[in-house]
Amino acid sequence: MKTLTCDLCDYEAQGETFEAWMNALKPHYMQTHADVMAQHTGNPEEMKAKMNAWMKANRERFDVAA
Ligand SMILES: [Zn+2]
Image 1 (cartoon, rainbow, N blue to C red):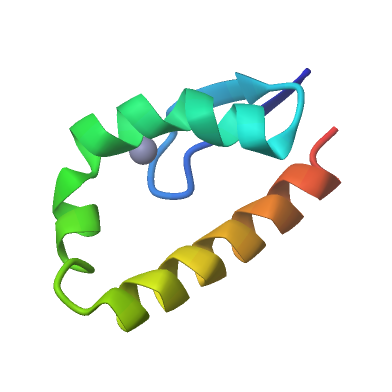
Image 2 (cartoon, rainbow, N blue to C red; image 1 turned 90 degrees about the horizontal axis):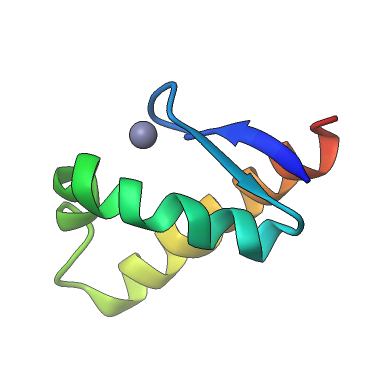
């Protein structure tokens, strides 16, 4: 089980895998960072690119976490 903070604040989420961690973070993200998510709505291509970049950056963070 790894504990990683949210990439935007100090909120901590736990997960056995990156996918589990992401699912644990999701409710927090939707509630606290809804404005950030809302910025990327509209253009599906841009949204997908942003999401992929986010996943890549956070997966790397997850992999190096103890
Ligand atoms: Zn956060």
